[in-house]
Every structure is written in C-alpha cells, then in structure tokens.
Length: 124
Image (cartoon, rainbow, N blue to C red; front, side, top):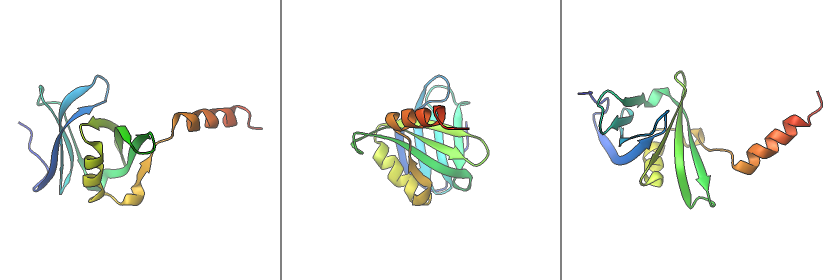
C-alpha cells in the first residue's frame, strides 16, 4: 500500500488520469500535496508536493461553464493531466496551496490556429 504524503486532507474526489491510457481513481488534495491513486492497481499513483507545482492549467469551455480537464505542470517532471467529477471544487481546493497567478487558462482551439497561421506566415 502506498503511504500518503498529506497529514490533513481537504478533498477526495473521483477522477481520471490522462497519462497514456486513462486510469480511474481518486484525487486527494491535502496540506502537503496533490495525489492521485488508481482504483485497480495500487502501483499506479501520482504524488506531487506543492513545492514542485509550477503551474495549474485549466481547459475552460463555454466561458467557464465547463472545465473538461486540467493539468499540473511541475518544475522537473513534466505535465500531468486529470479530469474529475467536480473540477471547479478541485481547482478551488488547489488554489488554497498554489499561488492564483500560477493558475492559468489553456489556449482555445482558435488561439492555437491563430498562432499556427502567424508562425507560418511570419517573415524570417
């Protein structure tokens, strides 16, 4: 069994990890960090201490009405993508431990297309 890094837990919620094949489990947000535990395989887990979190990136659609997924970008180990039952509640719990200026919105589909055209036709 995996030992939790948290001493006090603020939120536990059903979630999906989108790293390779989707894994179903639970997200645990506490005083020491962000944790994801797989329901079926105890060896598949993610533990991210708050000191290691660089940015929290939320994919926002329909002017904030729907948040399909969010990602946690770490300082050394890359980006981890998750989705959950109540993403607004999860992001509010994360905001207690991560600086709100490090919680950003991902680019929309049209923003990605605009950047592509600008880089394609940019003078060298």
